[in-house]
Amino acid sequence: MAIDPAAALAAPPTTREISWTQRDVLLYHLSLGAGARADVEPELPYTYEANLQVLPTFALVAGQGISAGDRGTPGLALPGIDVDLRKILHAGQALEVHRPLPQSGAATVSNRVTDVRDKGKAALIVLESTAADHAGAALWTTTMQIWARGEGGFGGDPGPEAPTALPEREPDAVLNSPTAPDQALLYRLNGDMNPLHADPGFARAAGFDRPILHGLATYGLVAKAIVDGLLDGDATRLRAMSARFAGTLLPGETIRTEVWRESDRLALRSTCPERDDAPVLTHATAEVKA
Image (tube, rainbow, N blue to C red; front, side, top):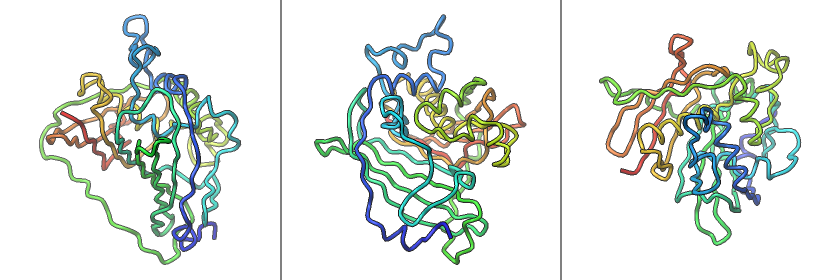
């Protein structure tokens, strides 16, 4: 099999050095639609290097963008894991930032597989990454869930099911995030060059009618909507966010996010209104500063 759970879990963490510049941050913000209406709202805190703020979700692409150079063909190659790109989907993502991210910088990132769950027809791989600057100060922690189709059935633990319940009342806010037809082509320049997001033939071979938007793009779009719509445009107030990628979004469609406030915690649900509110992000929460 392409996944050896015992080897994956026993492997020591792998580490790598990353760095990023203001250009990477600016490109990331542009790929989430910042400045799309620059004639009336240039969104300078996202699009201009003077007084530039950094969306916390930039952590998920730091060190992978235009300043990183050629990184070769994307894939999933970890100790004990070797899975074809056509078999994997990004199933979920959690992020916690430990302090505001700098406009440019460098960090040491440590990665380790913390769980491999047997979902029957698929395996769910849980990958944790931590980043610290070169003085040893923690920057962020991420947890990625990777769905590997056809790699289950090895007799492992399926893992716990996360609760899906939302407050039984109307949402406190509804945020709409439009996307552009070329959104995936721009977002992939942050480093995820998977052809699923650009090549119609590859997308059809993977079971999709046409290229889809990156899960992390929808994640970032929702994070930006929260900052702009609920946090007075202050990106430093968004401390953490987690979500399960419940459905695909096509470039050009809209993400509609319902928000329920629970003190410094937000419960979220994102759907696509053009497709009868088909789910996009579920099991979603954010932690914010007052």
